[in-house]
Amino acid sequence: MRLGGRIQAAAEVLEDVTQRRTPVTMALRDWGKAHRFAGSKDRSAIGNIVLDALRRKSSIGFRMNDDSPRALALGAAVFSGGVTVDEILEQTEGDQHFGAPLTEDQIAKLRGQIDLETAPEAVRADVPDWLWPAFETNFDEEAVAEGAALTQRPPLDVRANAIKAKRAQLDQKSAIPTEISPVGMRFPPVEGFGRHPNINADADFLTGKMEIQDEGSQIVSLLVAAKPGETVLDYCAGGGGKSLALASDMTNDGAIYAFDIDKRRLAPTYERAMRAGADIIKVVPPPAKSLNHLRGKVDRVLVDAPCTGVGTWRRKPDAKWRLTEDALGRRMQEQVKVLDEAKDFVKPGGYLFYVTCSVLAAENEAQVYAFLERTEGFELLSAGEVWEERFGVDVPKPWSSDGCTLTLTPASTNTDGFFFAVMEKTA
Ligand SMILES: C[S@@+](CC[C@H](N)C(=O)[O-])C[C@H]1O[C@@H](n2cnc3c(N)ncnc32)[C@H](O)[C@@H]1O
Image (tube, rainbow, N blue to C red; front, side, top):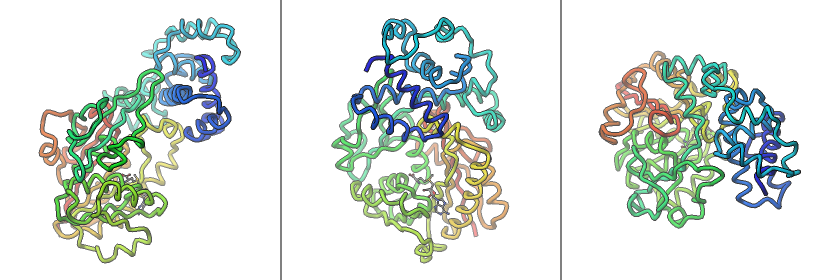
């Protein structure tokens, strides 16, 4: 396919996503099925344009003075994808697959006629209007920069599995060591129409020497600071990403119970643990009563709570525009529930960890403070000390609104957004 066809295809997929509310991965898959002639390079080019357009839907719409799917696709190709207006003009001349030629007005807009600096802050940050006050409260003068960092293309991070290999033993020549996590390697964000390597087919992955895991997720797992021999409960284990990181950090010594209310989400954990040689992971499907023997006995209980996923907008940009106040409210109710359920497993002197991949205070600090208010016998500790112990002082610093909890963000730590709090059970 030529450039014009790719841009037009991206506009069709964007129409599916924005007007029919199809999730972007499904819309891209459907387009691929209906256009089997398209090669893998075409698919990644189209995917990049679509994802870039969704990451910056608001600011591109402003700069184009038009938020139609075609304007978004054109804007994404130029403002994010590095395509020049002249390239579009040259390469689309007479190309029927591109549709109507660029208008004079579109050319002017793509050449930067409208200065983004004149836009309202929420638009410059590409944050939905209703969430902007939350960003401002959290990040103050950095709010635009934090929002904008969530519009960047993400890197692809992998983690060395200490049960099988050290980071230096991984054969990943196009990756660089991660800055904060001592066990991570990073494939930088793709440029232009490029794509990341297929890790699932990589020998290091297939032999269990490495796992795919964002550096932020690696960091919060390392902050749990689980020691060999301890008993850990991963209460919202999902696909087991953090259980695997914990098993690696514990050098496969001790016990990790991986539980999730949703059996289907938990399912990949069996195979992943096997590949990693992490035999200390015991997958516990629902019902939760299977965990009864662990009440009051666990050294470290991790609650990686269900959340809005605001911290992962770089990877799932359509979620940004789909999120509603109602959905946020539902996640907050679930957060109260999981904390209240999980706390009972912590032994006296043990620790309860609360993690989300959100940067919204309502899901983070507010949940922790409300939990401490309604629950006897837990005390909030400072996560900063463990941070220094594990990562030293010469690495980028996360946010902390209170000197105890930590918030990682793309702009501060160059990771996905994550919140981390640790509480000790004192009585
Ligand atoms: C953020 S995801 C976990 C991701 C996972 N820890 C990882 O690292 O890949 C949150 C999980 O919480 C689970 N969940 C929601 N409510 C729950 C509850 N009451 N008890 C246990 N798990 C729950 C959801 O099914 C979901 O898999």
